[in-house]
Length: 357
Image (tube, rainbow, N blue to C red; front, top):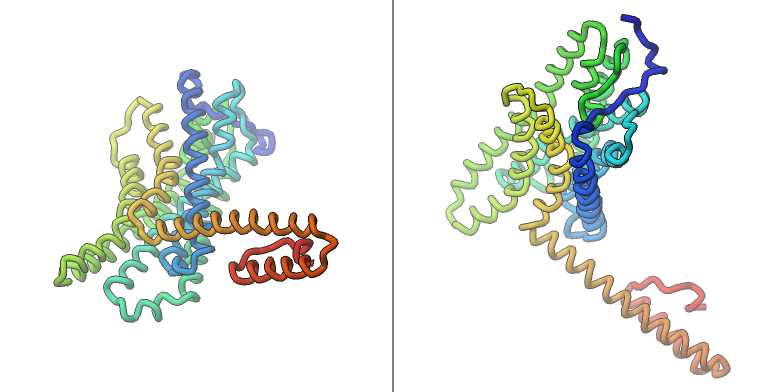
């Protein structure tokens, strides 16, 4: 076969082209889920930044996970939604490689980050007295940078090995997105090196983190079972329940994709990949906030603060209008302006400069 220059290649994402009605339904589902992903994860990030009670290692790593989920889903959901509504589902080689690289980076980073979060829970439960010393701010930042760095390195390695391959033929990717396994099937040369590096990457970024997570929870379980009070055991388990659910959902989907027997029903395989790529990031913030009283309290505090600021804003503007009505009365003018300044100082409300002048 004649080899094609990669700069001239354009791929076609097949998706569910044989089921156009299903694509319209999937468009609505993707739209709703993407909105939930953006709203849920951005809310967790904002709450972590604004509420000092959430300035802890657990919420620092959780905000990293939320940011990761936003980037991951934003790398393919908008373009996939466009393809659902268009007859031509083409994507350039460059865009396909960028999409594949970003999604690979996010997936690899999430594997490491989940192991880091398990270690954080291990230190918090098994070595609680030394927790503030061990999980220092510097160490948390280093562990987060390490997670992102390893994920990027793995993605860079796999991407560089993939783009060197020559492609020929129809260049139809039998998937919703530029997934690396579907991408490699289009190469018209030997891909043994790519398969070996992918296997090594799976061992390092899937099974090693899963092993570390399992070891962490074995120690956590043995520590919790030694707690005498039922209330103490319940509290210890509750701090880990959200992480356990996320890990189970994340790795359960991946392991199911690997272990299940190969079938001719490619549409089913694509839907499983959809669950892994979209549903998991959507459920992460829901799981972490559903039974978390700290997140609930932070949300109530933020909502109450917004209501208070809105009331203060209305009151201040009412006073400002009184100033405008009595612009000739200097004594009244000065007193009302001083009252506004006092309100702003006490409530830490940001007043407009023109009001205070």
